[in-house]
Length: 409
Image 1 (cartoon, rainbow, N blue to C red):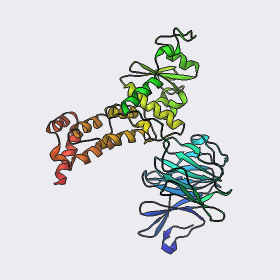
Image 2: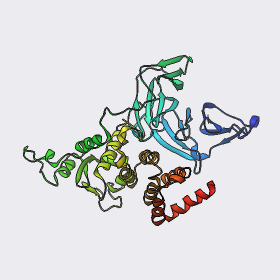
Image 3: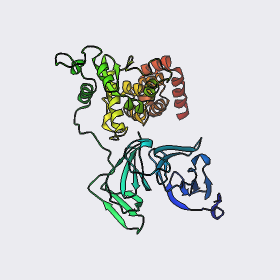
Image 4: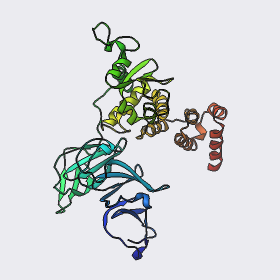
């Protein structure tokens, strides 16, 4: 194995290739290498991207929508950091431990991964021995789509067909297998046709039921009143989250998996005064916004949907409080990004300066940049009073915007 230009480069065992923004990623034994298609130079990613001892990379895939390079050995799927601090992030599976278990992260098990294919909705299709499986990038949840449809040694290449079916080239004989009758491009969607506002009311009714559900005249041994939901939550090993006068009983595991804030808050010895308490409160938060986020946490923990799913299709009036609360809760999996993308897409010349001031006040630098970019070609239609308010509330954003205006002339 030797880096270099053109025919000076040497490879040991090429197992997989992946196209990626001006270059070709190469899985070469335990290393990940890159061929620059302009200079024909071959380089090897640093030691942080090497597989552990006696492990080899078997498959690569590049997701152009997310800019993510995926790499898999026989038993793990990793996200590869190719810029800055080069390294690996274990997404699912365990090194040197085989199996076939549907779960999330390191609780999932793979038997023999031979091919990867990113598809819509932040999902990754995985050929694992005889089974096609799927991983949700948002939460690392792995699920088996079909059983035993590949031959014993799996598939070497996967492709999504125009009708949403899946094509696979088998590993041993190189035969072509077509799987139809299922649209592999579409993530699971909850079966609701409710209007956004009605869906919000539905979520509140399901996730924050009235206290009398847990006690009262029905003869329940659990007391009614303000402590009813907290007591019920404690009895089932859960925690009650109080938001704006509504009580949300929720599983600790779901909260801690979906939110870094809750993970720290509920961890014994985590450094927070409320750590380990059966009830926590989110002061000044919107209960309707939290209902959408809690629904999203449950859905992703079960591997049902990703950040683009209808569980985050909040009404326009709730976008700001929901995005702000998602950021406050340090939610991962693309939830904040999905909400801010919707905020950016909803901007108009009349609202964009107000949106920019709000984004700046909530530390959403990515959204602020998108809004400034939108403002430049629409500057003649902007609300002048909005610009004055922006100068007063966010002088740095106003200065950046005025600088962009002058550079665009």
